[in-house]
Length: 230
Image (cartoon, rainbow, N blue to C red; front, side):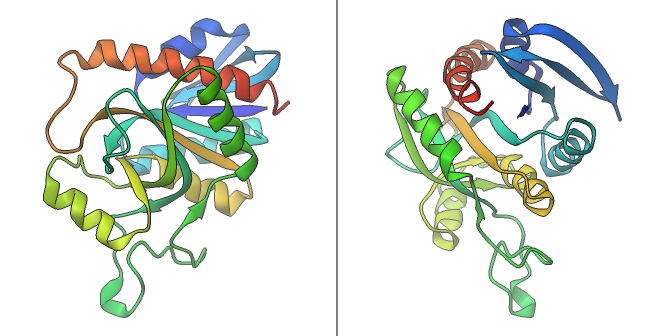
């Protein structure tokens, strides 16, 4: 089974509309929709915005549905001139850019117990996502996804994140929290983001319409991917 976690309802509607054999269950206020996509069992849910919601959602999904993989998809802001609005960022790793215990001598983003900064995404899933993007003519770039409970909207914030973490290509608010939960539960995970803005104030005039388009692209890509993960 493949778990798919998104932050916004509009991002999930397209996925759920493509599922067959659908059942749903609400746990702790989060609705989990189970079905089949591309011949593979999947479970889709909307976690809400931010790291706490995302982490709680991932833990519930793992305990209730025991997915073999979890993929977090949605939208984010670009941190590189290699990605424009509409392109796709594929995470090779995720970091929590707002995790800061540097005053006690630890590196920025360091996660206690795990004792890591970079949460590595599953290489096989990353490769499958990249190939699916190429086959659908969707421009993509691989790199580090930076997660934090902040909406990054200035050049100063972008530069500050890039100064601390290697090859940061995208900022968002859920991926590394999901990655942390997957890491402690030994579940392979991946993070992908359609670029919705330049993290500097520019964004599509109709965000809802853009999110629908991004969801459609994600469905195309993940339909190819999940069919190979069964």
